[in-house]
Length: 318
Length: 264
Image 1 (tube, each protein chain N blue to C red):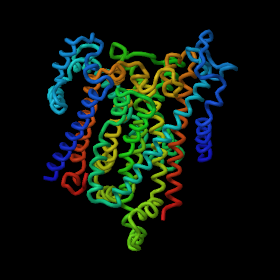
Image 2 (cartoon, helix red, strand yellow):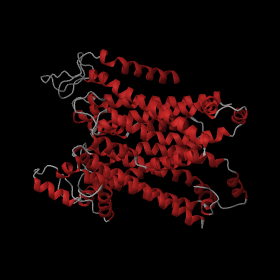
Image 3 (cartoon, helix red, strand yellow):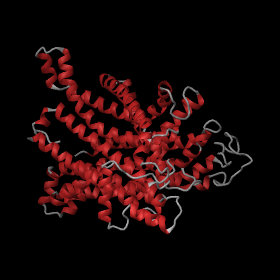
Image 4 (cartoon, rainbow over the protein chains, first blue to last red):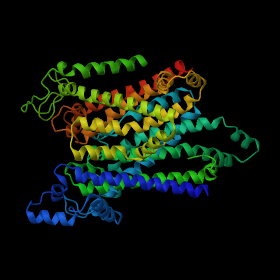
């Protein structure tokens, strides 16, 4: 019962968030300089006929709530209209750019956890030592370095000065793609890995002194059971919480990294669309980003339910 | 360590205030015959593709790069501290409404909204700064509120209430000093976030006309010159990173010292 009401509450909150985002994004069209008619006309010649066609096509003569409802109805069905710049359906434009960004984000996430978790554990094991202090300070510094700064430094160091990696583009074959995406992925992962290191270190230190671990060992439970069933399960909670933060960092970080490395992904698409006032593309991308954030946060909540029985039985408020 | 950090930030303040007077050349003066060149005696950090002096542009841009974020930090901290105290101390419907709004605002992909709003509605620093203050405040409200909730139950707060002091006095004269470590470190973190976001926005080419001597914009405009005069792009990156890192580390240290010395 507690589980059901929790899930229902979360779903409702997700819908409210997406609703608010959709009003903001739709409002963009109305508020943009020149008004909706001018924006949607784009570079086409402005004659009474084309204007009338635009007004009819986008229901511009209807009152705002009705227009919004029309637009939202289409958007829910995946129809965001046509890009003003390229005249192609918005969904096609996005589908075209998605692989680069997805590859970059996935690669960065892989680096984040492959580096962050073991380094955090190493720091916790050598608590207070020189290595621990170095790791803690290093992760604090990395957290403060913005992705675009990291990109430029990596680009200069490893691509221009040392020449180990390509400077530009995303590559064609799979292997090319991996070498082209390595520096961008590292730039994106650096701050996130630092976040995971700090979280992992804190979780491990917190666990080390817990009575239930001592008791589990005292009962003679096998080592694997103690580590996986007891320690890892408890350490997973704070790391899960960071998941949402990581995602937000990933989404916005990708914008900067793509710009710095000249990758043609969704981030570059958004920047181009914003500067060209290609509102339909901007609207679709903002809602897409919002939907991803909402979906992942829901998944994290569900993961809490799976991992932590206290949440499942409603003993701990989430 | 703290001396070094504070010294670096003090230097940054001086440069921000007097940077444009210190510039050895006119930051907008072009020398197309010279074009892009590496460091020399006349141009310590070299020139960009239009032959403009990189050092002078950095100095001229220091004011906007550093002072606007200070404005964001002051605005965000004032707003979030008063609202957080109010919500946590008064509770009831004020708290309920505020917390629902904060929940919604925190769940928003903030940077995305910032980029889109500033990019589409047109620009200048003013809008970005206002949007940032609005976006950064909710997170701090939540932190201050949760601390207020803990503090209001302590004996000294109860004593102040029993004495019949008005809520405003209890909140700002009694509770606030006990939240000082968090307020100070929040302010420094807001400054860092604003510095990085502002530089990031101009790096993306959003909100500023081309040619403005702005650190973020310089990074982007001179990115293609990395092989000819790397300093043109790397120097602003180093400055942004240096200021952001020292402010973060200083906030971290200050929080530790204040909460050790100030804990009552």
